[in-house]
Length: 246
Image (cartoon, rainbow, N blue to C red; front, side):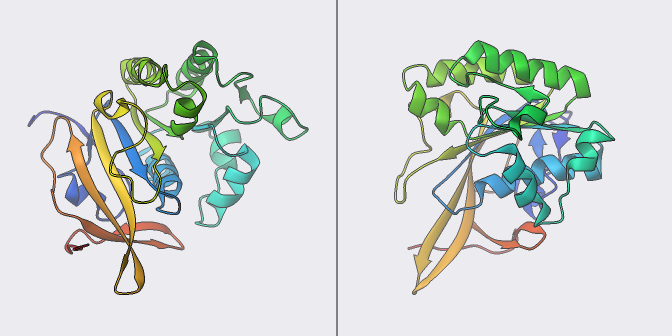
């Protein structure tokens, strides 16, 4: 474990909790309910990877139009256009539009049928090789569970094998309903190397954000629930504080 390379998340406070970062080639399930900050966490991991650590990244968009993603990222000061077009260090794989619409025609990497796991993996593999990607974000794998619940675990294993095999570290976001105890998807938590759960709980009449690392293969990590904020520069984790829900 001592010689294992860690990938810095680029999220203030998060690497303290992970004792240095995510072990290289790990696939991490980022699980949480609506509004918990999963997408922001995933985008910050990818953007900071390029800007601060020179590690090219790929975002697989399964639930949102690529145009909207770029606009949303810009709100945090993360303008990815230059990284995409000039530096070729960032890619959005469009697995949302099926190539339909004028804006979608301008996308370079399009998955025509997101339900076709082979096509999804082929386009992703091409994108990884084209830019020498080191980080991958899939937002969200919940789409795969909903469309093919019986195939979800197999698809996640397949994605894991390809992404990890090509030397990338990845975050898969997963949607859960409010109050749900699991991590989303039938048995998918057993297919990944790590699980980080984001929560939004009402405490004394106020909603509080917090996260906890449930597992992370290859490294020790904090077992405490840490509060975090979503600021105009992204997520900030208070690694020195503990939030008690009950």
